[in-house]
Length: 302
Image 1 (spheres, rainbow, N blue to C red):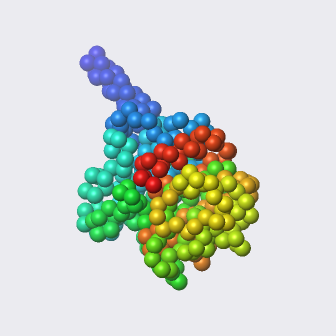
Image 2 (image 1 turned 90 degrees about the vertical axis):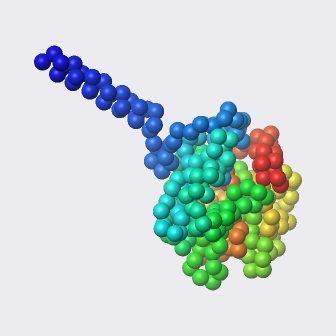
Image 3 (image 1 turned 60 degrees about the vertical axis):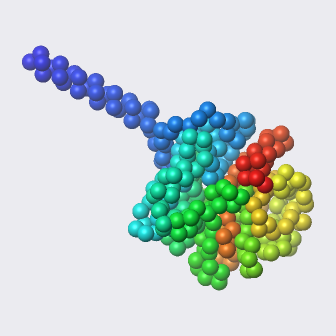
């Protein structure tokens, strides 16, 4: 009897230990799986920013407090999917990514939100998914991983990623690292919406259309690669740039809920796409904006 009781007590101890580990040490947040990673004692771009972003997406690790994955990728050889994290330096884990995809195409199913708000960018429909590997070759811009959009004009094939928890309503500070396609017929908006055309561009000419872009955007404060410019004069750029935008009214006319398309009339095509996107619901300081811009300029060789 004593031996049985001792054995039973030990089993209880083991069960309680496993419960503690699974609940407190390896707990997962719905929508953003958390993983145990070995990362060097680096300082990341958001670590020195006093205001937390509403959303933050990147092909690199943005904060030491984020312990989730970077992207979920589907390979088209068998449609298997895998979450890809970061290497020990906080860069996208290219070894894991390329080992998984092999010589196939790799498509982005989820771009995980690193803000902690679990507002991921997602796309479950295969023909709508943007690409990160093309026939075994990593898609890059300025030597860094890049999520490319190859939607077909005049069709319903809009490569796009939807904000999983609905529109981002308040945008006091936006920072977007993107580019549009470089060949004739390239299209795209900085950010998109299923109903509004707040960020309406003038493809091949202007980032914002003076007749259609919302006045909150046109009358906002804009920096491109850290240099101030009037939104009405900003070019439609086919090389990678960091776009920092403070809408005039953060709560109206700056909403967005999708990237890669706008309503059913405009889409990002010809390999345009994104490296990073941040949105802050409250204004950050000039020093903080410049800190993020300078970090991005250095990392992406802009």
